[in-house]
Length: 266
Image 1: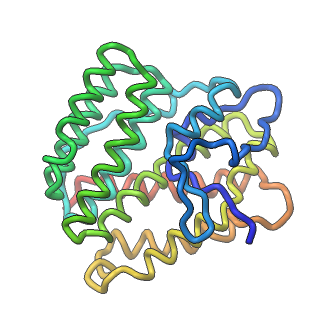
Image 2: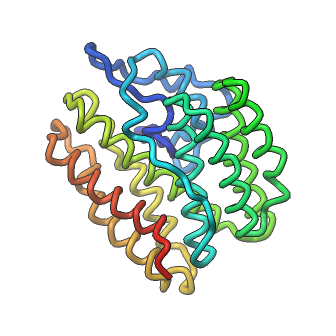
């Protein structure tokens, strides 16, 4: 079966577009931390940084969104927001916004506490803040990678595997929003091709379908499941070019979902 790259934080991993079209990612050269789930290669975000960092430099300051990170809503919403915030951390690193990275480190701690895994990420959150103070961006990326993994492992230990999936989904949605923002402002057929992600959509849809009924009845979760179905034909490999209009449609859907995840409305 053909393997596709599943990048949970695709847009936040240093993906940039220069005058020359980007080359294909050589998956075989990714470090050994990459894993395979359902024939989908899943490298951690910092691994993709290493492959894509040399391709150029968009204005990440325009993509970065200030982080609040004060938990509201039910645990599903908090888990989704935790994923969004960690994704925002990778954007802040690309923008080299040290103060925002430190805010994100504190937000990760607050949101982790709200889902019962604060103890697992306290040291990691402090390390993110310390590395940001030193402007040690490589270390910040590594600590964000590890914070994501620590959060998910702690949730699984608490038998909250489905909430761990919400963290990944929230991060991917924010990454997709950021990616489409960058591609939309500097459109090329080569960069837009990165939106052909059929394996990715199948991956998340299968996990959404496997949620227990309590989570499926959550209005936010139900709406995300509906919108994933709308994204699928837009992000499927049909063999043709991905037009600018499709990039805009994906951006609008992902932006609206991230907005809902971050909503402070009860």
